Amino acid sequence: MQKAIFLDRDGVLLNEAGHYYIYKTDDIRINNGVVDALKRFTDMGFLLIIITNQGGIAKQIYTKEHVEKIHSELKKQFEIEGIDIKEFYYCPHHSDIEKCLCRKPEPLLIEKALARFNIDPDKSYMIGDNERDIEAGKQVGLSGIKIKPNQNLLDILSQISY
Image 1 (cartoon, rainbow, N blue to C red):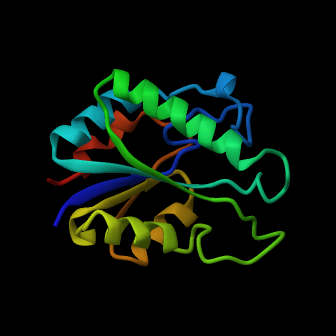
Image 2 (cartoon, rainbow, N blue to C red):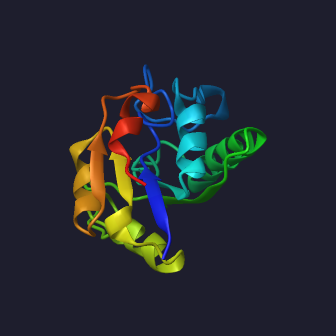
């Protein structure tokens, strides 16, 4: 079985200062330490998987195409740095509008990745800037690491066991 680090997107990978919703490629600002931390995680043998709530779709603020364009651009930028994001999973729903099983803190998207990539949850982590991120991971046996929004990911390297 493989091990993985699951990461929330906005506030963890992307700087969300001044943006509640990030859906334009011009708004992509990768947080300090992200590139170096992701390289280190990869060197430790972890797969990298993004799990993100994108409720702005349900609120009709932006579309799935906007989200997929952001993910495509991020994948390209990370590939230039030698970083392979295995997959981006996102929930397009919002709890104010509809109930679903994929919006964190529900673990469905993480469960899909665990099955698809044969991941051992006991050796894997969920990194997020919100309690719902950590809760989603805990429900399937991941170790959770909660950071402050836009915190440098290098600050938490010592919490990752490999």
